[in-house]
Length: 62
Image 1: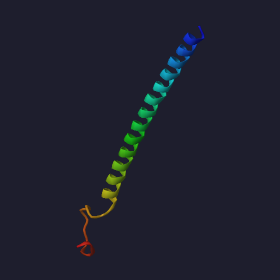
Image 2 (image 1 turned 120 degrees about the vertical axis):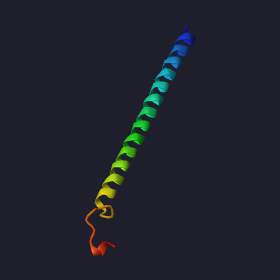
Image 3 (image 1 turned 60 degrees about the vertical axis):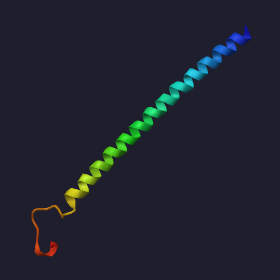
Image 4 (image 1 turned 45 degrees about the vertical axis):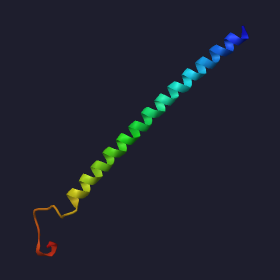
């Protein structure tokens, strides 16, 4: 009977590790998505504040 209990314990441990792996993958994907959004917003901010796209050009910018 100890063999059956050992087998069930192993199955439960395997399921727990599989769930943790899925959670880790989801967390990694979310981290990647957040980093991509932050990079995109930083790029837009840099483009809007650089002055090269501004409609108010002076002689010094030519």
